[in-house]
Structures are given as structure tokens and as C-alpha cells.
Image (cartoon, rainbow, N blue to C red):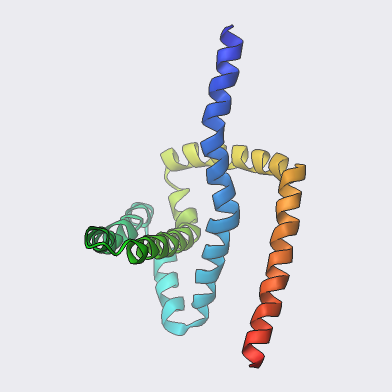
Length: 169
């Protein structure tokens, strides 16, 4: 009976973790790559260089900046909801979430080496990353994942053709 309860609890707890992993795979990394392209701009490249050179604790504290910076935008979204502008409020929340995720993803890429020098961070992050990679390997080998990847590729081709047609007009 205890084994069955453990399996059920593990299944329940695994679902949100898998959703996070899927989001990271299809959201976090592409958004980070998008922000990484901005490094072609001289001022942006300088900013990224400065971030990479931060000491470990400062690098860790840097993650608070997007959280604090987005509070006024979230409050504006609440204000819009309160004024009956639900669509605008939802659009603002989604845009803020995407932007915030992109910024945090890129910040993590830039600061990971510095943060790995913090013993407690390395102790937590290294096993997490190893576990995540094992799980993602299993997920990527599954039939539903492969089907989703094929669908994603078809959608990209369709959107590319659509964009091409729009830009020709």
C-alpha cells in the first residue's frame, strides 16, 4: 500500500516538474537565444560582458532586478483588469511574462559560471541539472514528444511561408 501511495505522489509531483522542463525546453532556451542575439549590438555586448564579470553574490542578486522591475507593469495589468480592459490586461501579463522569462534566462546563461563557484548553489544545481538531463532524454525519446516536434516543425514552415507571402505584398 505504501509503495502505491509513493507512486501516486511521485506521479502527482512529477507533472509540474515535467511542465517546467517542457517550458524550459520550448520557452526558456529559445527566449535566451533571442536575447543572446542582442549581444551583436556594442552597448548590449558591453552590458553582457559586465554581467559575466560580476562576483558570485552580485550575480545571484542580479536576478532580483527583473522581478522588481516588472512589479509596476503587473500593477498596471491589475489596474487594467479593474477598469474592465481584460484583453489588454491579459496581453500585458503575457508580454511581461515572456519578456521577464527571456531576461532571466539570458541572465542565468551569463551568470551561471559565477554562481557555480558558490558551494551551496553548485550542490543544488549540479544534481538538478543531471536529473533534468536524464528526464529530458527520456521525454525526447517518447512518441508524443517526437510528434510535438514534428508538429512544431510543420508550424514553423507554415509560418515561414505565410511571412514570405505577407512580405511580398
